[in-house]
Image (cartoon, rainbow, N blue to C red; front, side):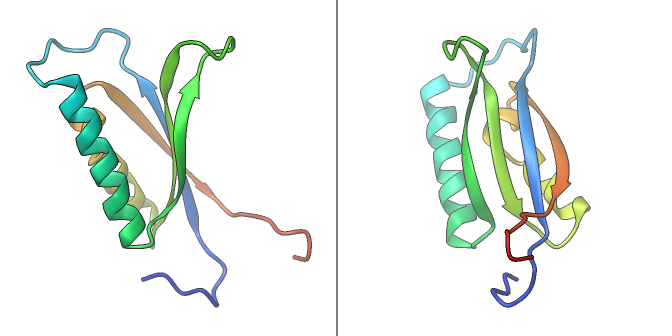
Amino acid sequence: MYDPGRKEQLYVAIYRMVPNPPKTTANPELVHAEHRAWLQTLDDKRLLVGSGPARDENNKNHAGAIIVFRCTSMAAAEKLALDEPNTRNGLRIPEVIPWHRMWFED
């Protein structure tokens, strides 16, 4: 549960595109809608700190995503990362890294 008075333990999930994704019958627009609904659910539960697409060095091609979670443990963050709809459909591979946000007054 989120506690605003406690220093947060955050987790950064870096989602990379699968180089040779499996052939899927999933509609890409439907998967994207599921992804957005999944993010909204995380936000509603106060588990989402931020998210956004990753781009290549020319800022042209989609290269995955970066999502920052509030979780109680690494295991919980990894489980959450694996539940992302693109990942469930075999299109992305997440890497989860523990992270503490730093403030200048700390």
